[in-house]
Image (cartoon, rainbow, N blue to C red; front, side, top):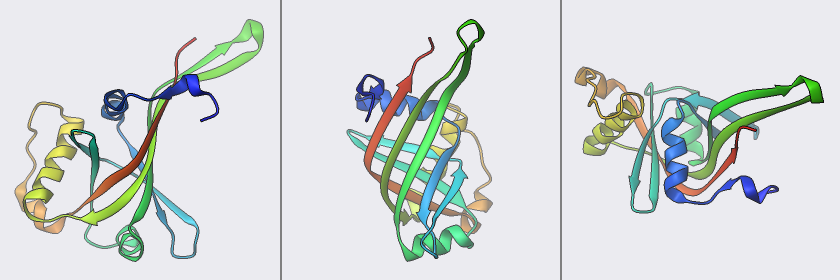
Length: 158
């Protein structure tokens, strides 16, 4: 990282930033060799120092085809955006927090599928155990990114 003072090194702090984000951009290896990036809702599962991201989608489509071909993926999420413009100095900057990483995707079923859907609901309705119709479970794909590398960065407000 070019500016080490901006790096977030504490694992719990990285997870805290992730919990404040509302979109995760997932990058897959496209069929023609170009990256394929898709913004997704997500949920987190944190155990000791292990981190997993859960996503959901339709049972078929381009994303599913690409994941079956190559399960390697990268992700990025960010929050805390604030444009800062100092007109008197002719200076503009941006405050933010971001997390990036890599891992491998796998489809989940059974109890883990339900845990994954619950994690997604908890990301957007923390602590509420928000209801979703269980009839949707069989027609919903749930997949997990087992995170292998993760880094965080923060540019604080001036």
